Length: 283
Image (cartoon, rainbow, N blue to C red; front, top):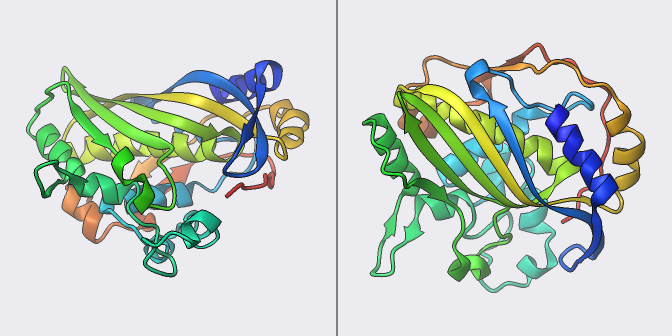
């Protein structure tokens, strides 16, 4: 919580106003932030200075791992975050590649599960990394990426959290996650939970110990209609201790994640929080 609140205060104190063409709003912006999450100590980086809905973050992560490309599929597993981008984004609605209601196009997990090869066909990057880690292989390139510039026109949104790299050191699994852009009041909490949960889950299904997760954010910003709530309310609250995330020990493989795992297989304990803050969301 301290590193998150420090980032929020840094944006308030040092941020520069930038016009955002996609949303038509200004963003108070800083460049480069590095956060570390102790998965090894099970200290879940869930924001405590406001009530946070961690289940949607886990559900979205599951959808990415499964390669979903439709907002209806995300809704079925408990995540509504793609409804607006799939159905209310004017540019996407006018895109000839959109297949209809709830279609997200070629984004995030759909890219990683079907990454195009220049000579034809595709590579399942997620399955490839899981297979390598399960065998104890670390070739310094165990990378899952959602970023494919040649396909941006085929999806409703470029990926914000665009790459995850795994490393094995002395039987311990580490994660470096890279994010090109972050809406800190809303996305910051969501993304932190996902980075933490991804390392925890991957360690569990590959038989490795979970180490630390390192989260790099390149463009960290607060939208102009969020600033007052962040400056006058959230950063003035005292944080509580970090809660813990527990996963069903019966989850043994990637196939389990693809087939039967639901939100009921995840539990957060020790979560104390301040009352909710309704930050505006920008599509």
